[in-house]
Image (cartoon, rainbow, N blue to C red; front, side, top):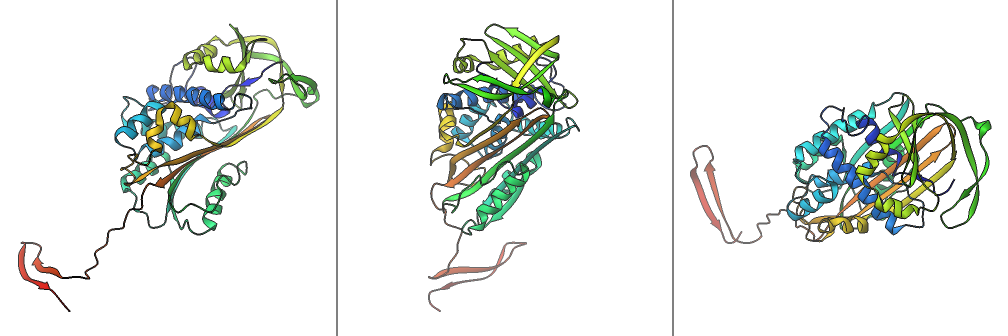
Length: 400
């Protein structure tokens, strides 16, 4: 078995499997197909860009986690900054309210898609104590993303621990110490998404059928792995340059799709040529097939902490990272300093356990002076009846 590709991530597969039936037939109420299509395009774009940076490494990401964190941030963008984010996230021509409503309903759906699996999606916003943030921005993210909003004294060394503990709790201990202290004085806000998934195979592998076998790595080395084995009826396809199989979890509402490029097909070239349309073609080509002999290695992957700023800039979001970015919907004078991502997964005979976290770090391009009125020089004053506007008294103070 050569060049195994677990396509995108468990969580990205969850979007297509749980939010859609076969092909492109959307069946989740109030989730716009335009938003899902845009998110799928973003998933492939970010995966390809990251893969170009780390072509010789294992990769595991959650496009959903990344897009949710960035969409919360997008809710405060305007002008060229907003247009750039729309283009990258796949929201061009889609009303902002529809984007938010779709994510609200999608997240709600995913959380209850199957009682036999565990799926947690959590969002939070952490604001430097004393910062004045647009209330509409906060309300929009609380309403649509159920974001927990907290104000912290970032100068306190314990604030990093507080944020890291939240991420660790929401990922069931899978992701620890996402942030390192001390927090830079120009950091204004963290917008965070955390996802945790645990699903048992609908048809588990038998541990006694697992045996040592060769895995032929991309670098040419041969590695001895624990190879799981099962012969069963699976949704399976053989296409041009690849084989594909669908492995369902729980009540068959979520699944892992595994795509195996043919011998001699370079996996990085295969990824580069993949499109959302081809991904849909692969899914629709899967047919129930009897007696499929499946061999899949047990594996653990940990990817990150990865900075996504370079990838996102390459895709067209460079304005959001510039010191003159327009996030006036949050407050004046801030920009995205960095976007951090980490994802982990373990696959064994029982099923899969995965987690991911994305942190959007917002920084101040220049300190904004707080509104202040210090009467330390001559001034004029009035005493008025504010109902009628009548001036009762007026005066001037030159010295006291």
